[in-house]
Picture (cartoon, rainbow, N blue to C red):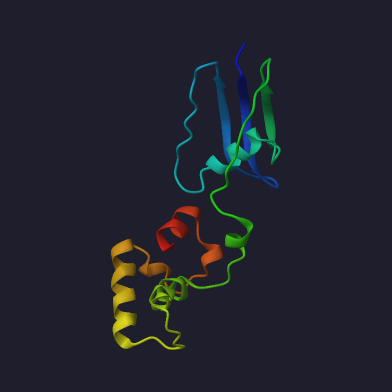
Length: 141
């Protein structure tokens, strides 16, 4: 008997599905690797397996014995509510020199823009951090 079995899961929020037709089983000694594009339902699947969200349809069964599943979220509640823009976060890197200054120099602004270009986050420059995907937040941080 599998330790974990998912049968024809449909996952989503409200009535909007993010992933469907998910079927797999995990036996003793197996590893489960969840991969996919941003927004494809990876986190929602893990939340369903841990009981944090209910599947829209389908079944999740746990086998016999003491099965423990741990979950470490990609972002904390604080990160979800962080109101700063990407620009403000990147620019705050210049505040670490121990001297407070309310304005940034032209050179600091240009340097920050260059780093944003190199990290592929320049298109996000005016976006609010809390509105970014987990992967985008990691690149900004």
